[in-house]
Image (cartoon, one colour):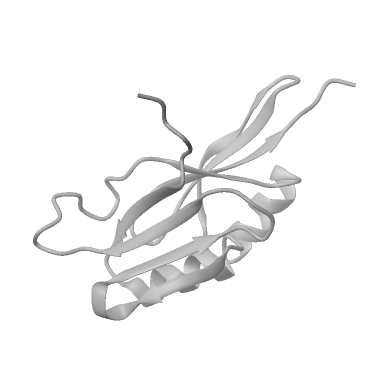
Length: 125
């Protein structure tokens, strides 16, 4: 078996509307699909890449808000993106970490306790 792609990562939240607002206004994603009836939304970047799914917590799902995998969003400038997100209410966890010549990354926490990362790819000249 070969995996064709990573098409979607998803998190569980307490309030779908609040989470969509957070990930569009604070993180900078765009809303691609939404279904309040099913407690689901999908967001994406403005260029390319996989989607972020947001699911409302429900008794059938064993994953609770804040117990999800870490989703990573690529940005052009991690310091600038961190400052903008913190000014809008994101909570940073620790400091920006750097793997010289490879990547800079910062973990942040959303309103439901879900961790996510912003990362800036570095290139050798």
